[in-house]
Image (cartoon, rainbow, N blue to C red; front, side, top):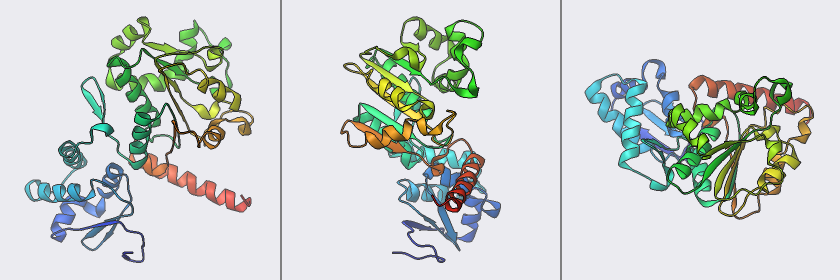
Length: 322
């Protein structure tokens, strides 16, 4: 086992040719280091002119070499320069099964959990993914669902969420059913609009290729040749998740996403997300993926915020004897 500066379990190490190269790549006060960590999906440790990864990052070596080459030509590298280098590496070392293509856009996994999630989506009939906000769970689910429907592999996407946020019920919100559901489904539509324009989404709704449904309205149905997405599943009870998963008809797939730290149910013990992940873990055609704060993709500060909350929660658990 390699030991560097008192830190063990370092998997990969790369030595910069000169300290000047290191400065041009990592920036003043190593300001680019967190962004490189974000792209590679691993923590990095710097000691002198050696940067090391705490986990096996597939593109670590080629990215470091590419960045050093670019730095000799461009000088100081910015985050866009680093992202461009990363994209060049991804395209030169393609993993066809790891890419999700929707229209003219292609999604590549940017963390180990995202890669595992895509692998499970390709090989399983049901995938349960859970973890903190900003890790790409919903984004990957929407991208995958759109890719199947737009290529004719599935007839439609069925989108659903438990309607419990903010303690309001549908009956107290204005408008028809679509208008009532809109605030709850907005995050799903934000993800769809990254890939296709709102007008095309509307056309798909009119053609029946996108269907939205309150979770409670799905009881008694058998949905065939479709891809079903249950988002915010931490707010679904055990019986609701069981009901949702048993709606699968011939040729259908289901994706369940949620964040166990954001349960809005009055009785948090009723949440069925982690219960389902535990009970169903032995089923062969069902994949389970756990995301952590290391997989956060929204911004550096989101990852730092998540880690701060996790540390506080760990302290609370220790003090309460959990």
